[in-house]
Amino acid sequence: MLIRAAKPEDFEQIWPIVRAITTAGDTYALPRDLDEAAARQYWMEAPRHTFVAEQDGRIVGSYYLRTNQAGGGSHVCNCGYAVAAEARGQGVAGAMCRHSQALARELGYEAMQFNFVVSTNVGAVRLWTSLGFQTVGRLPRAFRHPELGLVDALVMYKWLGDSTGDSA
Amino acid sequence: MLIRAAKPEDFEQIWPIVRAITTAGDTYALPRDLDEAAARQYWMEAPRHTFVAEQDGRIVGSYYLRTNQAGGGSHVCNCGYAVAAEARGQGVAGAMCRHSQALARELGYEAMQFNFVVSTNVGAVRLWTSLGFQTVGRLPRAFRHPELGLVDALVMYKWLGDSTGDSA
Picture 1 (cartoon, rainbow over the protein chains, first blue to last red):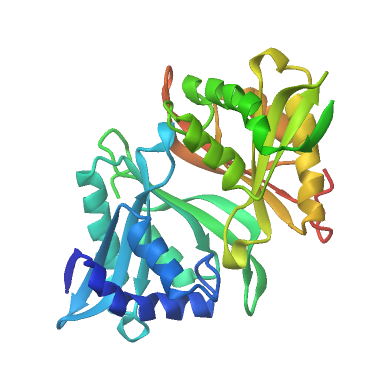
Picture 2: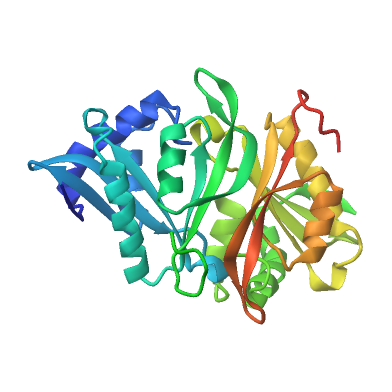
């Protein structure tokens, strides 16, 4: 698997991956009818960096990295990951998350925060936990799941700097 | 005290209040050098509603209300409050927070979330707690305080809907 910076024309392959996720509406707090222009803005233009994961020359996943808060919070970044349905269970998300942590350190960030991990997305929660993220918050009934109704969302966080006991 | 919807020309009085807060840099995760145009965008234009608190015809505080997350998270709103230094300790923030909760219910929101309450801002933490907010998350060292260095930030949350045991 090759993880590389996204080029603008990559969005042609990224969009179906993101659209499948937003249409399902069960993992991301994004409009289910998010259109292509808004998705491009959200995934490619607003973030500081966007990367893609390629397998055999085909894009199977993508992630973005952005600064999570301004001012006194600007040492913490945020990422979002998307994997094509047909490429799930092959370690793509984990590889992208490790890549994003290395990128974040290179860029000088000291921590990474996931603001809104839907609690019923147990695969994601397990994966981020295994990659060193702690669940530092639980937002009661903050997500309306299309099948399950109101469910909690989690805030997950990993310190990336040197000056810490967290070495996961 | 009168709390009313802000008019565009009110920003002339709101801006010094917000500027004092961003310049101090110890409570909001906003750039300390935030300029007037960016502040207007952040406080007046991006949010769904902005209100002001008036005393004797003078604006002594302001708050904004916005939807905190899109899609399945859009039933939760977020607010930010600012009080003029000379009007602190007179209940302005509390009055605005109560007003914003009533507004949020009117607009159909089911919960209110504060994403980033600096933990050393003990007056704010105490006030929000007294107004029914729970601390549902703690972001370790997520804020660089200008005097204290890295300090935690809190996520605070209040359910506003009917179907809950929380009646604060």
